[in-house]
Length: 84
Image (cartoon, rainbow, N blue to C red; front, side):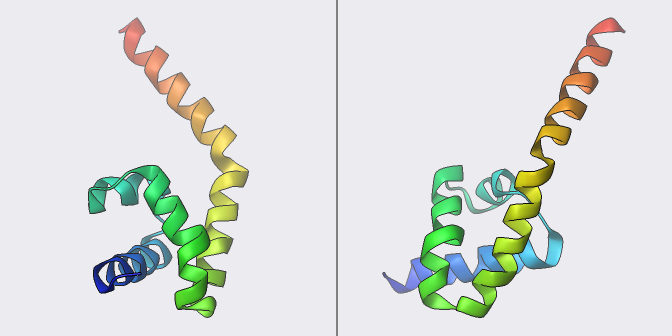
């Protein structure tokens, strides 16, 4: 793993822990795909900093638990906009 990648992974993890941003939001911030961010945080971070990985994993699991609620809210918002 090259140094730039390691720095990006640690920055992604730091931002996720501080702000609780989603993988999609982090991908936009760093200009990479959602898949890259997910792979960085779920697999590559473990070998860099296991303690940080554990914190990030809790946030990822929380996002996974509430994703169906967020989807419902987004759909509701979308259709409320169409009615106006």
